[in-house]
Image (cartoon, rainbow, N blue to C red):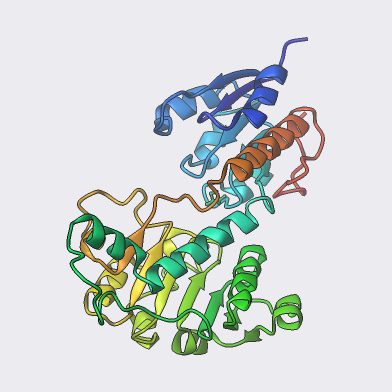
Length: 327
Ligand code: DGY
């Protein structure tokens, strides 16, 4: 019996890729950049399964062009690149990689928080540029982390892990979410507040919401005005949750202290973007889940999801279990 045909849109860690290659007739896109839309469409045409990244748009058009497609295994926990409703309507399972990247992502969010508070990138640049001539009584002063208030927008798995880190630093935890998180309240003493109160009271505001029509530009010119002048904004969620130009204006005018961004809008942020000109904006290229172990585990999960779907079994991390699988 011939093996199912699969297109993998990028080279992913061996622990998952090896399994996929052994068990399927796989084509792996070798370029560093995502396959262009026409290439993706062309491969999808005779594929039984796709392994995709957040940079691949999996919409109704693509699914209609893929009559054999049974499963889309996303190598990410976020899945705003997939039209899950359209997948369900077509009997295609969509999957993601939840859980394994929670702690690693929270590690990076807290790293950004600390680096912005204590001006680490600026200090590094200053020292490297040969400007360090003596101990400066007022040199590169930043914000205290211990004892400060950490606001979490979106108290899901990653928000909770971020709050745990804050708790370890003696921070007061506030949060806002569409649903109350009793575990965070009981375990960490987190206090549920309105979004307005979160903005007004947080010394550090970390975003952990999925990108939906409701969360697009959650942080905009108005919300930035409500934040404290000493506040640090951290975004490891999705770029469009923040209005980029409003953030630029607020940082430039010193309306908030700093921002640490793992995600941007657009992404990638072009090299000549004005945000890069600001010393109080620390930008890294969407690497929150990028530890060796986590990325390997994500690859394993994507492979497990893919192979289950191809075999007609409900994938372990199915986003649309209600989909009636194609025969
Ligand atoms: C995700 O998984 O959604 C991250 O953004 C990348 O790991």
